[in-house]
Amino acid sequence: MERPWEVLIVEDDAQTRAFLARCVDADPRLALAGSVGTRSEALVRLAECATPLDAMLVDLGLPDGSGLDLIAHAAEHRPACESIVVSVFGDESTVLAAIEAGAVGYLHKDAGMPDVAEAVLAVKAGGSPISPGIARRVLARCRAAPAGSRPATGPGVQAPAPRLSQRETEVLELIARGYSYAETARRQGVSLHTVQAHIKSLYAKLAVHSKSEAVYEASRLGLLAPPPR
Image 1 (tube, rainbow, N blue to C red):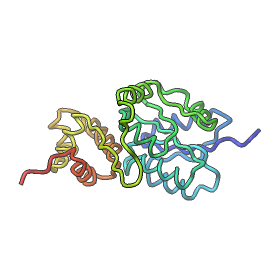
Image 2: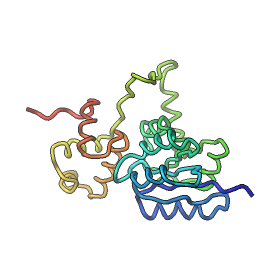
Image 3: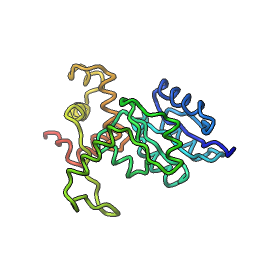
């Protein structure tokens, strides 16, 4: 039997991380190379892991940064380690950003995730597993764009600004005005957990690691009006 594929899991939610680890452990064709909850821990594993890394299951909204950075880092420094996103974020701009960073698969947590082990094996066989709902939204976006209208990419070409939801914009405006997460939750009439989920989504879409970076990047992209003088 050939050696099993070594899989690194990067997921901040402990229950989801344990579920993904069980999926990997249950298939003899896979081996768990590591299971971490932060971007910084994942960077250490990518840099120091002595065994070959074949695949990475990665969440995008990590507590200390964006999973997009990890995907791009792995693509550059561990090209044999193919990245599969496992995320609650399923909007077109986030999915396309992940693909552009180097992801070869995209599983949506809230859409009845397909068999995780089979998704990894499909990737190592040359496939690109994507949750059906996400694939349909991306295809719809491609169909809606006129032929030849896709924006240019490459050095010196600025990527289009990400699309923020109305609630994400409202949360961003409040934190830009100095409100804490708890104060933002009270003003929005939602739970603190909901605000934190919106913040994680913002970080992933803007590819930033802190509130100050999010405010700066959103202002630079014209997504946030400058404060009145």
